[in-house]
Structure formats: structure tokens, C-alpha cells
View 1 (spheres, helix red, strand yellow):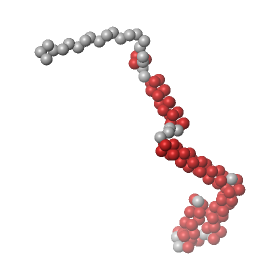
View 2 (cartoon, helix red, strand yellow; view 1 turned 180 degrees about the horizontal axis):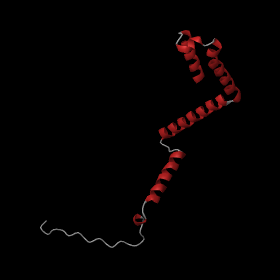
View 3 (spheres, rainbow, N blue to C red; view 1 turned 45 degrees about the horizontal axis):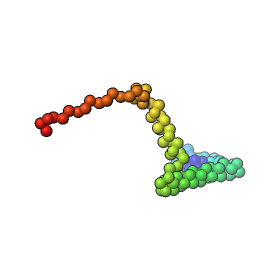
View 4 (tube, rainbow, N blue to C red; view 1 turned 180 degrees about the vertical axis):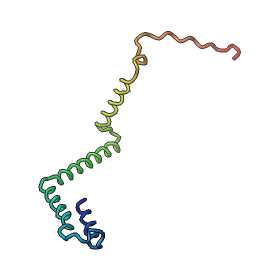
Length: 117
């Protein structure tokens, strides 16, 4: 596509006699168009274009599936994995002093009531 844009700009500049482009020969103006045709031919014959289309369709299909799973109230495998990873990271980031202490805590002092109440 960039070659086509360059070709159109060169063609417009040539027809308008803008700067040095007005004096260029026609074959020089047509080179970007020829390059675009050759690129499209290569991309189609090598399967590059078809692979890109298939990858795009696959991404759309996965997005549609995840949207349907969310609408049903189900979590996707990726969400479960992300949640599990976040929980593990939170567990690892807590300092050792805040983790569960196996020693029993001393009983709390009973609160005293004010006798005037």
C-alpha cells in the first residue's frame, strides 16, 4: 500500500508540474505501481497474505469465545491462570513476619465495662 500512495503522489506531482517531478519520465512515475504489483504477486503466491488472514480470523474467534464465556458467567482458562498467578505473586511478596505463625496467640485482655453505665 505504501508503494501505491507514493505512486499516486508522484503522478499528481507530475501532472501538476510540481517541482522536479514534472520533468521526470513516465516510466519513473510508474515504478512504484510496478513495485506494488510485484509485491502483491509475491505475497499472494507465497501464502503470506492468506496466513495473515487466518491469524486475524483466529484472534476474532478466540475473542468471540471469551466474550461468550463471560456472558455465561464462566471463567476462561486464561483468567483462572492469571488469577492463580496473581495470588501466587501476592503470597510470595508478603514478608515472612506476616505469614501464619504456628504459635498460639496470648488471650486478649477482657475489656472492662464502666460501672456507671
